[in-house]
Image (cartoon, rainbow, N blue to C red):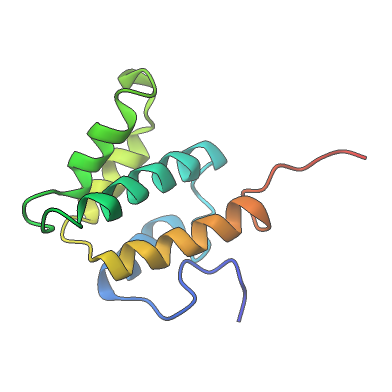
Length: 116
């Protein structure tokens, strides 16, 4: 099993839709989008301690996490599309995607390549 896959522990139907659109390794997303997606998912997971998915959506996490950090006009459209597609995401699904993103950003297809 490749360690760049979207999830290590199996994929749900919701995550399968993400993979269908962006690739098994989310290779169609840029490093920047993956970093922003990771921030959004982390905010979503944190807020699920106080709210349910129906009370606090992943789109709300996107707005809360990123509109204060970056100029809203510079948030990639792909990230808005992903969040719209992932409405109803569970904490377990979010954590699985976070694991995969962390690996991709540090070791996989979204790592910073340092020239020697």
